[in-house]
Image 1 (spheres, rainbow, N blue to C red):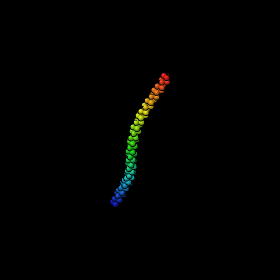
Image 2: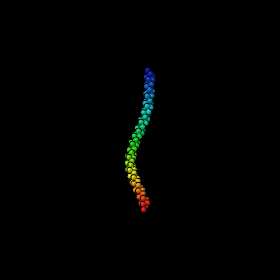
Image 3: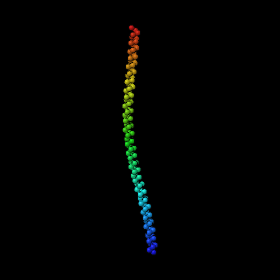
Length: 107
């Protein structure tokens, strides 16, 4: 009877040891998954911060482009106005030249 109890106790001990080994392995796997999840979480947070910075940079660039567009439109208007003024001066000079030609012919 003692040997049967001893065998049963030994089987229970082996079974318990096997369970402990399996639990240690599972614990190690879960710890590794936890580390990986933490790293992935940090990477995602960094990516979100990078995305937010990129969006902010795009907004600043957009504002600058709008300012440049407004400024360039004003410059184009000034150039067109100047070109019109130059055209008037050129027409005036042509008229003066024609008048002087007519005056020379008429003398």
